[in-house]
Length: 138
Image: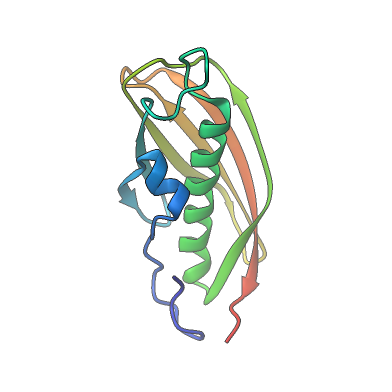
């Protein structure tokens, strides 16, 4: 959902179907930081490890939400144009935490770093996502 056209109301995160299936929960949402959690269970690949695609999907979602929150302060919305990730280690169980923080908050582009950590705070994956800010359609 997006705020009304012309409104600078802060956008509130709404989970999509994939987010719900993956068990994503929102912990914090602001222009400065978006934090979510996701269980490893239900998001593993055939060798019992957290699926790299699950890490990318949740990381892109959290980074995009952060961009849309910023865009909403300008009366705009955001669409992803680039995402890349480095997998540092994996997980077999537990809860991962996904944290998006801004690198650049512009009027045309945003770039966020998204860190995925395990329950002991070890880095699982680092993503970088860039979003293009667009005027909202009526």
